[in-house]
Image (cartoon, rainbow, N blue to C red; front, top):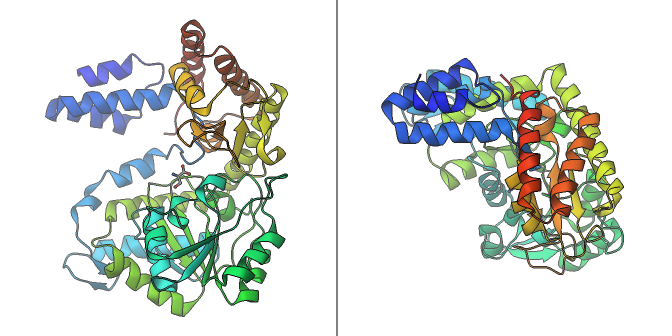
Length: 436
Ligand code: DSN
């Protein structure tokens, strides 16, 4: 057996046959790459992934992305390509588009955006002119950089007006958002966030947009899988345009997606994705999107999505029982923001992220609303349950996960503690293999 294969075979969890075959092939072809990839496969199999925006795709999605579909230039759209030989690429893109429309109950989908940020670039270009005003939640309050951060395209080419969270409840304050809309008269209002743990009232957002003559854009990147399964309310029929990534709760390959029911906006979106902001689509990723959307249409995915939320509620309650504060008091979805200070005022997100990684728990530091600490330090952690739920963990295991989180953080990076927890987690992960 190759070195790469041997190094993985020593881990607690074996790879699926195709992945092991890939490592064996790479070990002969390019051992340096094989060794790195084997280490990453091992890391994913033997650690607990709590980053709210990550997931473990099925091997079917993974291998569709790693296929001969990568070999084609297919600039254009099905039936209107700039290259020959696209017949099967037309078929796969049509399949992905049809499944996306079915999944989200809308009549248009563009599956070509390379990422969520790219989807947002094309959506902005389709519904606004440079210099127009966007009203959005800033990143420091849980928004996304592509919704108006200064160094980003959005903050560079558009005027950004901000709404905030209620400083006491940390919830969206719809009356205040309405006042901000009346004052700033935006062309577009954006809802949908990276670190907001409560249900978004899309109907109320649409009423605010209508009042000021704005368009409503919903970026559902984080909650797309929950929306697709009815576990979170849909932005349709309220939003004029919906953007998302495909790799978070939706559990597909890394990529973006744009949806609408408005024919005029749809036509503009197609033009602004290609040739407006991208060249050749990543057809191998579109193949992976088709597979993932097919999986998400199955009843098992609804069961999965409900469990993601049940697990998040259980994890939130367990963290509270250890003395941590949950922003907004808890969660309705897959994500939660944990304020570390009530447990120990000296704890920072940056320290916790590092100590936890040493122990085999992967999280990201995250500012909490009105965080007095800078973004690379923070007073909080963002935790999410999509990946753990994919592995089969349930509410009972969430208590164990919270106990490990607390033990490591409260030890303040004691290497004996993180070493002991690392071994416990390695053994635990063997009971919850990655999807095959
Ligand atoms: N960077 C992603 C996240 O972690 O939420 C958003 O695009």
